Length: 367
Image: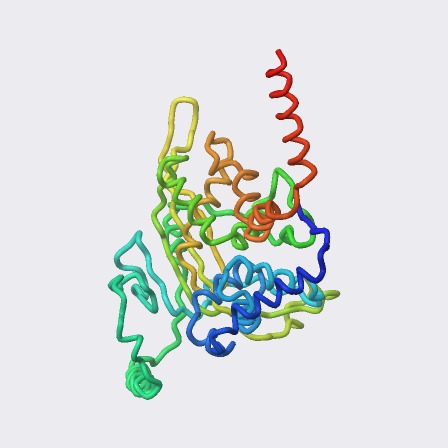
């Protein structure tokens, strides 16, 4: 649902906008877009994911314009996205060929290629580092020079790894499915309706507000469905993007064009379920929950994989298994827009309710 405010009081609105700009500039300090790009990587990644537009520079511009407000930055970037023409289809990404920067498994200690911890806050002390207050550019340059020298000595091969689940499929422990090459449904071209397809659900989940997706994933873990997966694999890295002109979509892949690479987070979670073999027999099996999003945002991707499995089993009587409940309430723009509309004038409806209450009370006093 969308709301359009009736514009009134033009001078007051313009004065309000000036006050907003004054609030951003009154300290006479400017944060460069390049500084946001260089120092707020996690914030940029979240904005791109929720806005469904991979462009770090524009995400940084939105963050600057929104003064760091996630919901406003996502709104700005998604609004910009809606103005862009669609000239190409991208080839399906093969994440098995991802150039891996980080790769861990909570299911196995030893995985082919080993665990690659990469860059993460998981192993840091959650204590304020007051040294950051006095950080200087000269110190940064010295540290980077030393770090890069070590990295050049240690790096002698490209880091490509197969999926952990592939080894389990070879053992017959996970079900295999025939290759499905049909075009996915696109919720940006057609409004979401129910029942939804899995491609629609995954698209809404990856565009979902990080906090909302995480909260509902946590709710499922806590008891609303009691889905408790084991993370089979988390991988963060870059994948190449190939496109075809719109009129050539689905044709010869040799005609595709390489346009660059993007960083993504991908998660495959293993969820134990009891499957009914016959009327008397049940067997423990595993299902896979899938999550993927732009940039590095592992918590969201893991929560997404939980909700993916929940929504695939929508017969369970829990809100986290109800696709309408989940998918219509995690969208950042929709939810914040609907809440924010309460600030718009509701004079007529509220006065009507007041008059009704007054009449009831007046009638009661007369009797």
